[in-house]
Image (cartoon, rainbow, N blue to C red; front, side, top):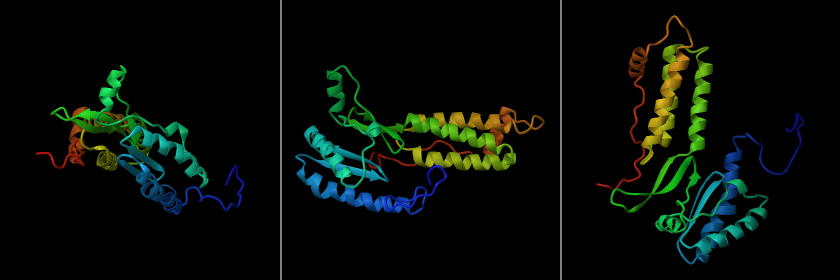
Length: 240
């Protein structure tokens, strides 16, 4: 439906349909997944890896030439299947063990990239070895806080305080279940700091007669067993 008019079409899938994600995955399996593993990877001089979730994907190459060759062929491949690359989201960058040294030689910082809500950047272990690190992307972080604030603003009109606290806990737990991974504790801690204050603000706007003091609010959080910061997914399972 466009501008209130329904038009029949034999192309694409219905937007919002529960079948659309499944059909898209099947389509991209043949368009990208098999093409990369059976064609692109075998033609590379060095190592090559590919990761896809829905319509977002990441291709990694040992050599710059292989990456540039893939980028050139990608547009033709997608065009042949009626698809196109989102230019504003597509980049070819140097990343990995030698990226930091190479960037410093140019007087720059190593490049970062965002994938599935995480900004991936070149980091180091405590022993000084290269390590891929991740933090919540700035865009997703701001979006999560906006959505929480909007939910709290609307919920204070029809939820009792106890129920509002329990539902807020569920939302925060969901955020941490995804983002509380190795090396992202700082961002998650900042998220917890802000949502506690957002929730305090809107709970106290329900009724001036029964407002929480900060001490009373802290006790209420203990009552609902408010989520604490701990790493849900350890990306260093083999460390001692």
